[in-house]
Amino acid sequence: MQTAIMGTGSYLPEKVLTSTELGERLGVGTQWILDKTGIEARRIAAKDETTSDLASFAALNAMKDAGIAPADVDVIVLATATKDQPIPATACMVQRRIGASRAAAFDIDAACSGFIYGLVAAHSMLVADPARRTALVIGAEVYSRFLDYDDKRTCVLLGDGAGAMVLAKTSTGTGFLSNKLVSEGTLSDLVQIPAGGSRHPASHETVGAREHFLTMRGRDVRSLAAKVLPELVVDLLESANLALPDVRLIVPHQANGVMLTEWSDALHLEPGQMHVTVRGYGNTGAASVPITFDDGVRKGKIKHGDALMLVAFGGGMTWGGVTMRWTTEHKGCLSAPDPSGTLGTALLD
Image 1 (cartoon, rainbow, N blue to C red):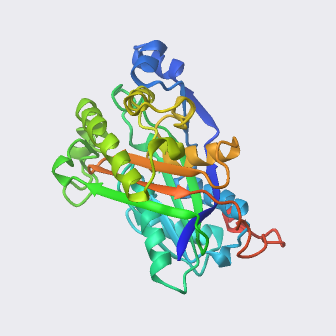
Image 2: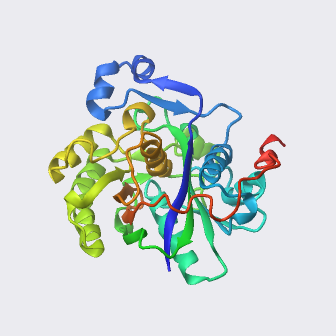
């Protein structure tokens, strides 16, 4: 038994924060940000928008694309580092809002690699249990609530958004081909939010020291990514019995536009072989892979039978990837779309 992606969806907040606006605020200018990041704009959640809001809208879009109703969903895996609150799991809030009452729902946090971890977890759960048929895997972040907008090393990179995929069992030769997940906890201090957990709970001191904002040792992160991502690609290709020219499209975590260009050059990729959205959306953490994948689907860059690769790198430190053979044969095979128009009405509550 195999699993395959049956539908994709994404959601981006309406508010746009351009690099021109941000550059003026930071006193560095637009060109400095473009030269460092390749990012022209990023989306910012409205004051009344939460991670679960963004995740729910992306999930509904993916479910509509797959042609399934809430009752079809057996598992919800939400990858996020920016939960609505410590308890309960943000995935449970999404479950309630989209009406997927049958689904087991839980969060997963591997920072920017979270969606890849969630996809592999959902795939394994479907394969292991004959009773489970579908999983909803979501990546969602509202990083704007955790950024110091006086810190040009971090705030120029990150934005808000959500992306989702519907994963379902298939008996065809399409679907997942290989996967690999890696964690290196000895480097956990490279990307972190120091306070707000059990080690340093919120206090006047932690707030005063600005320890509830994201910090990043960017140069060390970039050096590590340059080393491990090419190795990850080789391992994924070997496990799937593929060569790099066989891969129609690589969808990477949109960490930094300049870094993606360097990585593409290092791998000697063909023009258009790597799909990139970072210029318009910035780094949306665990949401960046599904947002970018959905963008590729909407733009017709992915065809039935194509070999695809998804890769990500994030805090922890963590990295991972999957290869798959894309299929469009089974869209809508699980049930008809909700004819009553009640799909997602809980979002109005």
